[in-house]
Amino acid sequence: MEKTKPMDRLVCGDVGYGKTEVAIRATFKAVMDGKQVAVLVPTTVLAQQHFSTFSQRLDAFPIRIEVLSRFRTSKEQQAILDGLATGSVDICIGTHRLLQKDVAFKDLGLLIIDEEQRFGVAHKEHLKQMRQEVDVLTLSATPIPRTLHMSLVGVRDMSTMETPPEERLPIKTYVAEYNDQLIREAILRELERNG
Image (spheres, one colour):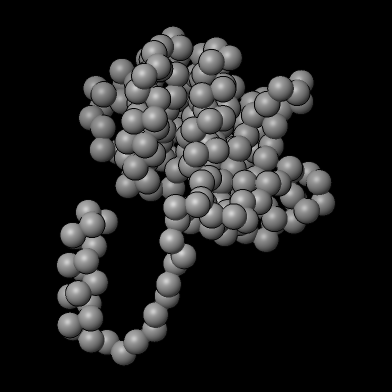
């Protein structure tokens, strides 16, 4: 992010390995450098999750974070769009809504793309145009072959997260026949841990 040529980096890591933490830190750096950040995610659920996580982590700083998705009213969306254009919104987390023609940033410095493989061809063409002007950080647990190839041949930089955080328990996967009691227990366990 310090070079004159815009960054185009792919961060690969399993679920829970800390890709979002990397995104938050890159976002903080960009905002502290006076730039705006767009965080593009494939679903409204993920947009809300990221909005909550980013808001909690950056709460102590004078940073305005907004979420732009179909769950915002037209009036709320217009206020966010106005804030992006004037520069009063520092970080905007959103779905493909961020790629619409009416979205204009005053000084976009970093684009974070979470799970790029979940976006269509038209969206990727729009992203390709943005890549020429701003730093781009792509996060993925399962990059598509084309993206991975671009990283392997040096078109994009790639970082791999191979070690889980210390407190993370290993994922255990079980295959079993359908069992109502087993499903009930799993649901109750998740509810108890607020999962």
